[in-house]
Length: 396
Image (cartoon, rainbow, N blue to C red; front, side, top):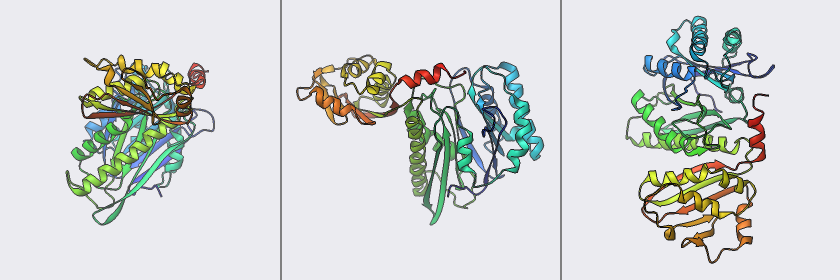
């Protein structure tokens, strides 16, 4: 069961994504629900992102509805895009007798096209009539764009002697790169959590999950992630309490699973790659190296071909910009096979072993800098012919 008491989801077909396809999601939140949100840092933020940020602040984290459309990002649309997003929020408010500020809009799809707000408004009645606590699976499908499968996760956790639940859905397959959020994701729990703690828990979990993935190095104009706490279980958690730590661990685990689901469904991806960098002087240094590897088209194409062209990984580490890097101290492993040591190919390495290490669909690239105790991890994909085809034909 994925249902969260106090939260209902309604799905409709507005004819934006494609005829006969679910492309509109309305999430109804009970009056006592608290919601925290993180948004993209892309300077060309979409109109719905700006509005959602304004509305969640204006309601002090207590909006009543989330409205999500797919097939159109309403980004790069200027003042007309903002007006269209406001019109959609106003229509929800009129239908439900709440303030326009109580509605958070979210959009995903093609950038630069006017939002057909009239279609969304016309389909709202269907979405309202479909509201149900059990609609998570269909909702997970309604928010997809180039994704090939849904991303839905739920977990139960014991708090205060009671079973509580966390459920989340996400979408994303391309234009995925860490920057506060990395796609659209909506997570909810029946636990009672005050706003400052809710915001802290979301930021921490997002940093350990959605900020750890990249498909293509492109941060979207529309990225957003929300965490809503309905409080329907009557279990309240306090900062730094044992229950808070248990909840935080469960939330982070669920969001990591959603984040990894996105990577595994990356556009054209044939491999799931975990890049682990240890031995950094600072976390930032280790993180910088991990991202340099994950964002390298040369590394990613070699991984796609299962080609043990380890020089590309070595070069990415070297160009990451670390001061006074002792290249002789760096070691690199792929799936446990030592590739590089003492600034050169490892003495034990053979091309056969390298080929075997690169062949599985799940790969782990381990880099040891040996200059400190800090570490970082990034999850990414290879770069295939299909990625180019999908994005070359995205609007056709």
